[in-house]
Image (cartoon, rainbow, N blue to C red; front, side, top):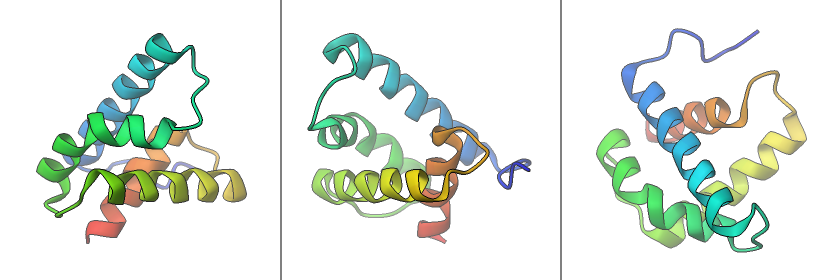
Length: 94
């Protein structure tokens, strides 16, 4: 079951930004990049700050993305990673 079904517009905006960033990352790096979290954070930070109303640095967001990736791999949710990350990010800012 999708625990993030029926989430807010903010949730859907975060999902969109994560998908767009993933697409840009794949185009720029071929998908292989050990520094992926930093790359994502540099592109997502402005959007995340605007949407979750939380002060974060690029390094904060990169560390959070790495933690979210580990959590996603451990929990293997039945939803896409962008939805999981967006939901967790909103939970963090609540």
